[in-house]
Image (cartoon, rainbow, N blue to C red; front, top):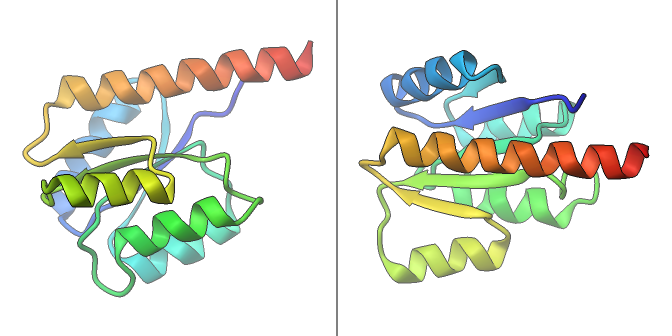
Length: 133
């Protein structure tokens, strides 16, 4: 079975806790960090299947984190779901160009976030079975 590890990189602790609680109920292992520097340290220590990433963060912004993740083969296979208040089309395009797989704007619909994460998790499960078989 594929490991379902998620890291939430969100400086708003209430939003982070809300997302973490709901993902935990869905069976995911969830870790939370609240700034960009801590996020990069944690991502370099562990492999996460999914990164839920805010853009406006203290320390290192989400765009830079996205770029770092996707440019390093050790964690480039992590899926990135951006959840940000930045709603300009240029920001969404830039995030996708850097490698983000999904972009949701705040305030986001929890069902949409859970749907995106579950869809990614299912594709990870199929990929695991193909590689194992």
